Amino acid sequence: MSKKHLLLLHTGGTISMKENLETGGVSTDGSNPIAEVIDIPGVDAQYTVKELFQIPSPHVTIQHMMMLKKEIEATKADGVVITHGTDTMEETAYFLQLTLEKAIPVVLTGAMRSSNEVSADGLANFIAAVKTAASSEAADQGVLVVMNEAIHSAQYVTKTNTGSLDSFQSRDAGPVGTVLKSGPHFFHTPTQQRPIHLKHAKDVHIPILKVYAGMDGSLINQLSGCDGIIIEAMGQGNIPPLAAEALIDLIQKGVPVVITSRCGSGIVQPVYEYDGGGASLKKAGALFAGGLTGQKARLKLLAALSGGHNQNLPYFFN
Ligand SMILES: NC(=O)C[C@H](N)C(=O)O
Image (cartoon, rainbow, N blue to C red; front, side, top):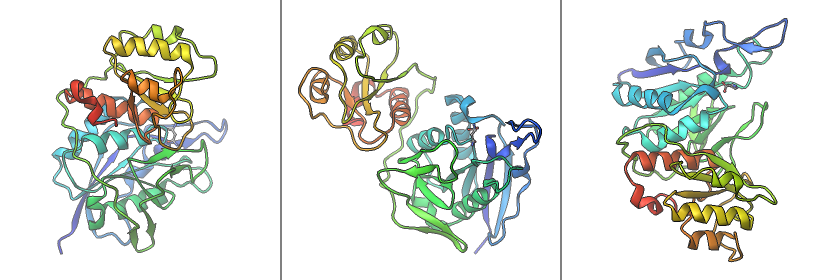
């Protein structure tokens, strides 16, 4: 069998940063130790290495995600590893999952500790990600995130802890596999959906609003100019009556409103018929995002709108 060709795309984040031993602060000095790693024990592959950008992931925008999509769609490599900051890794992974029109293994990884900290996790995560991307089994799994030896589907993974090495979890679904010394071992394959073909990818204006007890309509009333709104509602998808009234007003003006839950796990459902309850919101035309977090529902709405599916949004949120 001929050698695998892997594309290694570096984008920044803690995996490429160093701790200042005097101040304890973490930042980049322009160098990237992980980009120098181009020989992985046990993986028979040739590598193309590109440092696309070197930014902390809170600085990542849709434009950066689009750059990654274009690189991946243009490559002749058999698989891709992306190093990325962890704060928005799940968003880039999910955007790629929604929109990539190519089915090769794509694996994102990063680090919770910077490269010169005690027990830095970046190198181990990177090696596990390369082993996964080199595996033929990874091809049908969609976009993956490999952290702390676990393999997660972009669909479900989320950063659950500010500092723990075990921060990345697929809360309702569990990981799709684990990386052993010998390579990846998959437990199951996530269901694949057809990619959303983007007609344009401007960063449309879709704010995420978290609901709280006693919330009124004052904030929502200011959002009539936006392209859509994501609501992190209470429980299964309920909101206080005054906030609901303002939202229903926006829905009637044609603004798509997508309901997620602030609970952090579980699936939103239109159950309650009281004012502001999920069933009454659904009746008024609100869309429900299943088990997606607010940040992923936002990317799904963004991709659907960028694909020109404005009239067909219930197909994406049911
Ligand atoms: N661990 C990390 O990578 C966090 C960092 N703030 C980033 O997302 O760039």
